[in-house]
Image (cartoon, rainbow, N blue to C red; front, side, top):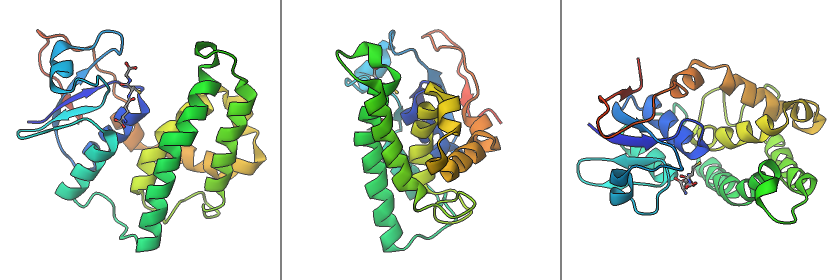
Length: 213
Ligand SMILES: N[C@@H](CCC(=O)N[C@@H](CS)C(=O)NCC(=O)O)C(=O)O
C-alpha cells in the first residue's frame, strides 16, 4: 500500500489528498509537523516538503505529479476537457503556484518578511482572483458543474487567502463567484473527508489510513 507523508493544512498536501480520495486510492497516511520532519521522509525525499507519496517502485514528491499519477491510474474527473481548457488549466495552476503563492505568503505571513506591504500583496492576489472570476459561470463553476483538476489544485490556496481575513474577502464584490466556488468546496463531503484530523505520526505509531471511510 502507498505511504503518504502529509500535513493537514498544507494546500499542496490537500490537493494531493483530494486526488487520492477521488481516485479511491488507499494509503497509509503519516501526518507530520514541518518543524519535526521524520527521518524516513527526508531519506526518501531530501528536499523535505509535503506531500510525499511512496509507491512500490517510486517516490513522488511534487503535489502536481501526485495528481497526474492518480489521473493516469483512474479517470477521476468526469469532464473531458478540450485542448483549450487543458491549456487554461495548466496556465492557471502555474499562475497560482508561482505568483499567487508568492503574494499570499507576503500577505498572510507579512511579519516573516522584511519590509513588506501586506495590502500590496493582498491586492496582487485579488487581481489574480478577479481574472479567475471572469471565467466562472454565473453559479460559480469553472468548466462545468463537475470538479476538475483546476479546482482541486487552486481551491486550497484560495481557502488560505480567505482565512487571512474572511470578512474582507466576503466583501469583495469583484470576486463573488470565486467566493461561491470556494464555499461549495468548503461545504462539500469531499472537503470533510480530506480534512480528517490524524495524530502526528511517530516511528512506533500504529498505521492509520486515508481515506478514513
Ligand atoms: N512544490 C511542492 C511544494 C510543497 C510545499 O512547499 N509544502 C510545504 C508545506 S505547505 C512544505 O513542506 N514546506 C517545507 C517546510 O516548511 O519546511 C509541491 O507542490 O508538492
